[in-house]
Image 1 (cartoon, helix red, strand yellow):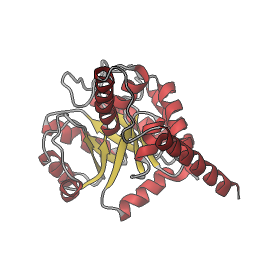
Image 2 (cartoon, one colour):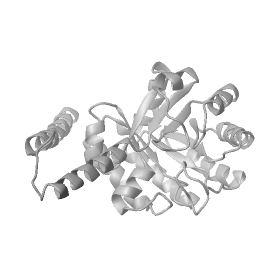
Image 3 (tube, helix red, strand yellow):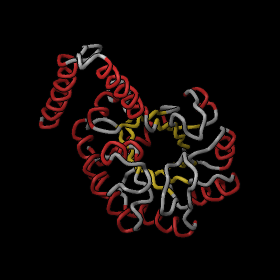
Length: 284
């Protein structure tokens, strides 16, 4: 069943005009996001922050991200999961190996970018691009390796002519969808939509280079998939800062607000029950 999630996502794109994917930073945040959405995004920004406590500038090990996806997929076996794999962890053979592993785990898709090292988050300055031919060689080998997984080709180019040149080449070699990251207005999306016969992905991140848009705005310009890169991470940071300050100001007095032992335990037991119920269903 898991090996068909790429095809299932392609089928969903034929019947749903736009699909949101929620960026998570750990399995707990994934379980909460999964209550509201069937698309989960494994964000490099969120994972680098939560697992290493470091910025998203190339610290992520491929083995760490694969292990994380496996934990999320074990808890959420029916959800669509798209994984940010950066540049495929530098080496083409490593990129192919990671895609193979993620497909076996049951990930629905991966995003492969055209940055070269040292890499940066897509919404900060200082990004460097791979030579297009080098990136296309890597992309083609990944596409030849995969059985079914949905492959999104991402460019971090900022000039519109270069974005068009690169994304047209991505489409020609067989990428399933296209992402131009860090764009500053929807005119870029409109231009790509007029030139490419591929689903377009848009990355939303609070405080990033791209303005915030509603799903209706994005739907109208032809976006098919929306990644919300870091809503869980940023919400957690804000809540933690607030709670630590309150605890310090109150001389260490704990106050139960919205969540305490009963509410948190209820969520965790719900996760366990859902996992066990699905396991029982699959065994029969």
